[in-house]
Amino acid sequence: MPRVAFIGLGRMGHGMAGRYLDAGFSVAVWNRSKAKAEDLIARGARWATSPADAAIDTDAVVTMVADDEASRAVWLGEDGAATTMKAGTLAIECSTVSHRHALDMSRELNSRGLIYIDCPVTGLPDAAASGNLTLLVGADAADLEKARPFLEPIGSTIRHFGAVGTGTVYKLINNLMGAIQIAGIAEGLAIAEQAGLDMKLVLESIETGVIASPQVIRHSKRMVARNFADATFTATLRHKDAAYAVALAESLLAEKPLMSRAAVESYARAKAIAPDDDEAKMIELVSRHK
Image: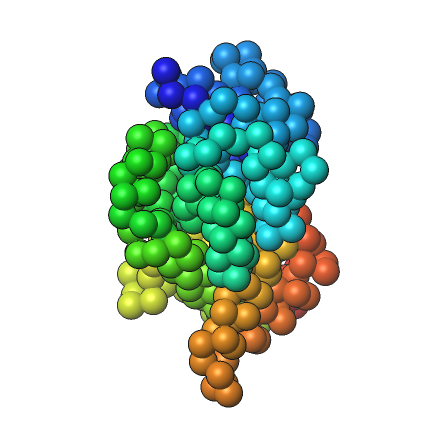
């Protein structure tokens, strides 16, 4: 029976960890709050007292945490997973981290005989729970083949972008484009409201027009309805991802004007107002109809 440790049981991680139980894996779980693991424990997961405890005698450790700081702590902290992982174990980073952090983790964990793969994901929590995420992988081809049995339970699509770090590059591009798009939706809808347009007609036009995308359609409906319940992605997380992406852009597009900086500033304001609310609440930054 393959053995996996899953670290980080937030909106996405909880469903992903459950997929390993569904697939018959032996699963150890750790999260800062044990309450989020109770139903997984009831289904057969072993509760670990630390990332180091979770990683004992596993074939793979999978992390899904918030940012660079949390990632470094669960891998390399005093009770980090790397302290107990045996040589040859897969270290699969599903968290969205900075490009520099992914490269640093790869270098450090490889020096300890571990196999680091950056594998951020796209998809909503329902896709995480059903195993239908898209996995954006940066890894040596041979390492990817070794990791594939641990990726297939959580993802229906695996996109291999190249060496370690390339999966993270694409994820940051993806989330930066999303940040720009959502900020644009908020501003456009606020203009439409202030101009007195029929918002039902506006939404119908968006859904059938050239700007339509799953993200545009979903967020425009929620913004018009002011329905921010059941946050799937918070302003804090979007700000973090956009800031990581801009840092990468500045390293690659030196001295070029970056429109993405404005999106980061917008999300900084949204984060200050409602850090844990859904990112669609961005519209309240610009709308007079609150």
